[in-house]
Length: 267
Ligand SMILES: [Zn+2]
Ligand SMILES: [Zn+2]
Image (cartoon, rainbow, N blue to C red):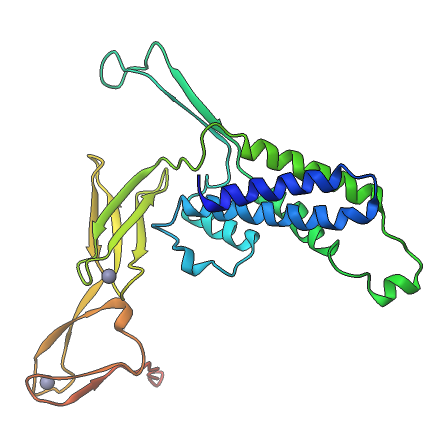
């Protein structure tokens, strides 16, 4: 179990302890623990995608933003699932007996959107405007919300399997820097573009008719801009940006990329 999942469990237990008190003043402590539990289960979910979404990228992020990126990587990242297996009597035929391995409940984006910011608002002192208007905190509503979130978190943390992310993956070493690149091909999509997380390499992955994945590095052969010199070099697509330059090995001149707009008179 990851450290995030166990800290979510601890935070949820503390929230339950605070919620058990009849003292409404304890509710804000329950809200704080529930917020931390939501962060824990979302960071834990993100770990399942660490090859595609490294933790350094989201260390300071809030759950909503993390879940949005996970959904970009895998549209089923926040869906509940169950896992079963069976033996095919013959290739392609449905198994007669399926064995159920377990089910997973995910704290999904919809619940995060519904509750996370509201929990945060319980942690601040009421604004002056709020105080002046004489509106008092609705402790009944706050308690109901906290109970609802605690129940959702309990279902998530009671999942018999977790962070199972099945999919068609393509994994290969970046031909520029040797870093392992691991990406899933979304269902129903035959071609995607992926970037190396370590260098400027980028690729198009294409599914072939026999279900293999072809990869093509984005690169271009570019000739020296000196008309009397035709020496060419290979440049990665992401390196073609205004201001970047190279010195030609043949004529020793400098070639620099510029973004340009050329106007032609009307005929
Ligand atoms: Zn690379
Ligand atoms: Zn040249």
